[in-house]
Image 1: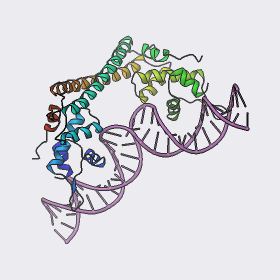
Image 2 (image 1 turned 90 degrees about the horizontal axis):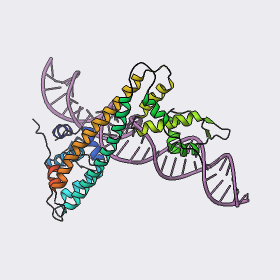
Image 3 (image 1 turned 180 degrees about the vertical axis):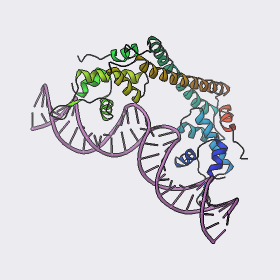
Image 4 (image 1 turned 30 degrees about the vertical axis):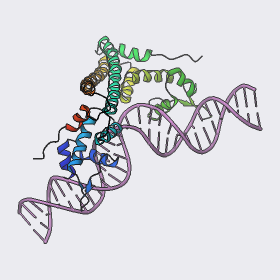
Length: 134
Length: 134
DNA sequence: TCTTGACCTTCCAGTCGCTGGAAGGCTTAA
DNA sequence: TTAAGCCTTCCAGCGACTGGAAGGTCAAGA
């Protein structure tokens, strides 16, 4: 398969696939004309990567997950640890965004949003702290 | 005030303040020795920026918000629109992360996390779709 | 046979918002 | 005088791509 076929089979952009080769996540063979030639195994790896990335794992985590996948002697605990760490990251990010959300909601609802200049949003931004230099 | 004073007054790293000058968000004067000299107005602007950034507004939104702040003839509707757009972004991101969170939770709880190789997390990643090339 | 268009290649630059580090100048106090 | 602690500029890197330019290859149709 050429890169275009792999792209449509996996849903990954060709650019991304080339990038993954660049950073050694896949190592497709080359045809005589210089085109990349992807085996079923390559295809499978790319699909794995696509799924892992879509779940938000970093590239380095994907690399580790793939090597665990290839390792018959792996301990599932190692996989689980990576996933738990990632889950923790996601949850912390959600909490952070929810706090932002509530602040923004307050600001948005407090602003009349008309053609007058008075604006509690700007007041909030402008009123923020400047620590005295002691 | 020199950059170090402004940094400790606003909580922004000196590097960040220089960067903000680079992209024309502030225009501090220069002392004879070449050091940046910040007025109270500069300080105020930087505090405004710091607060806006901490609420997650992009740099370009901050730029717009600052120019609205400076504009006596502004309509609060313009400010509100920016904030609402940002709030929408935050809410979409939260939804996205929550969906990730629930998938990850399922995967994590389904994995025994012991020293055996069987792992539903890897199974999920590996089982993901490869579209047939028709 | 020629041409067209759809592939493919590499390489470089840009995204966003900083951040780190090197190399060097200035200021202040001991 | 010297040392510490400021300040300056400039360049490179982060993560994970993405866009675009310039050019090679291939298959189908006129």
